[in-house]
Length: 235
Image (cartoon, rainbow, N blue to C red; front, top):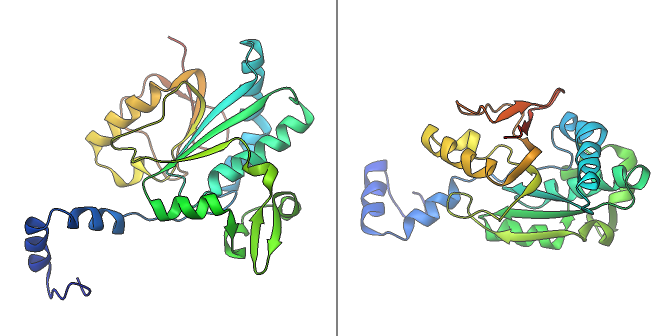
C-alpha cells in the first residue's frame, strides 16, 4: 500500500478489482519463505533413525534401488538439501546399494534461484548439528556453499501446489508449514487427498510440528515417534 500510495484498505481493494495482475503480487507477499537446515531437529533425527531406513528396506524388498521423495514448498532449498544429507548418513552405513531421488517444488521463482545456487548464511545453519556442517558445506567468502555430492539427486521445479504437483508414487513427502497452516479447510482436504494419491502404501507424510491434518484422514496413521509423521495404510 505504501508503494502504491494508498492510505487505506478500501483503496487497495479497489485497485485489486481494477488490476487483475495485482493479485499475483499480493499472493507473493503473503508467502512466508522461512527455512533452515535441519529445521525441527527432532523431525530429521527421527527420519535418520527410523523413517529413511524403513523406506530403504521396503524399496529393496520391491526390487527398487531408489527412494523417491518430494519436498513441497521447499523455499530456498534448506529442506531438500537436509534430506540429501540425512540420506547420506543412512545409506553410508546400512543401504549403500539404494539411492535417493528428491523433487523439490516451490511457487517462488526467486527462492528457487537461491536453492539452485546453494549458498547460505550462517543463520540458516544454526539448527544443523555442528558435526554435520563440514560434511555439508564448503566456504565461499562469508557464505556456506553446499557440497557438490549433496546437490546430486535433487531436481528443483517451479510449481504452485494449488494447481500442480509432481507425479508419484513417492516413498516420502514433506509438506511442512504450507497447506495445513495457510489454506482454508476445503483446500486442505482437497490437497491432502491429492498428496495421498501420490504416496505408495506404507509411504510417509511429514507435516509441520504445529500443524494438524484435516478430518477425515482415515488412510493415514501416525508413525510412532516424536515428530508429526504419518504412514499411508495399505488398501
